[in-house]
Length: 440
Image (cartoon, rainbow, N blue to C red; front, side):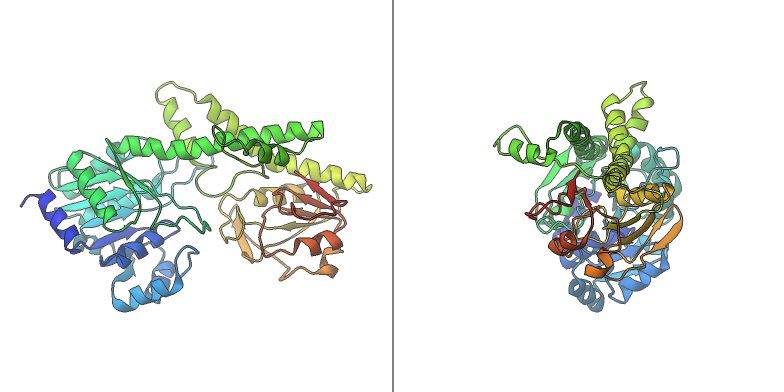
């Protein structure tokens, strides 16, 4: 049998051994689903703490069911290691490592490069390699393929298959998880696409959409997040205008979404958060310059969204001024440092920038998040000095700023006891008495 026939047979018989490189928000849920589908799975990570937690059945990712992880580890279907030599034993490798921006807002693909080099040292024949990390178009073919071929001595398409299948993870989404979210697959060559797609179909319960190349799949992922980035920027910019005009942008959006076609609702906020939307469009912007092309809409939307924390602090200062208080020395409580409601993920959270700006203005700032007792920001650890909020605590502050709409907050209690509330998330939309509430 040739490589294609061998791999299709092994998929059918569930004889494929899966390797997942990177056990974070993307990798661990994927590893769990692969193992649940009956494929023995090995997770690879350079962080010994994560590997230890997985091997002890201790879950650290919100979208993973604790009992699923424990049972899979106990049964031997899932294990983790820092030893990349075990790559030689696997038939399918998914690379799910971070792709952040550097200090110059340019792509940092060092994690992808180092992971690929580690895989290449132990890559064996008849193996599928798939990159899931979001990146610029061309990464799979121009970066991964040469590394894998050079280090392993194998030839792509003849000795191993290579493709790109972008992660689609929305932390905290109660409907769509790894298992039921449609997947896009683009391989180098039709056979690679067919076999890799077959592997995902054996695991996931959603549509697997095949495209003609990894570059199409890479561009598709960036389109998803750039689309959201630009539309959020539009709403944020109109929010600033609407405030000047005395109009609620939240009411405007709710009215517009009554149209059953041609409109999708996006809402304003204190800025963009999470790994994808604030970062991924910059990957395309950077790559476009290689072709002498300037993505003006991406650049403009980035400027607007990046400005929102500063705008929120300006609004907070004006709220304090109404009570004849200065920002300097004002006691301010920020509620919620997660980038979205009801999760413990604070990656790129605009709340962290809001807190930083308030402190730069010499405000006396405290923060509380029922999901997050501490966070790291710009290399420093920040710990909340509050373990709860109650009537007495709220009364101590000149202003309460809501930056994450957690359902655990008692908004009526907040309204009754806070002197002033600045709601940047419309979390208090159901509160009738709004005398001390100002909405973004």
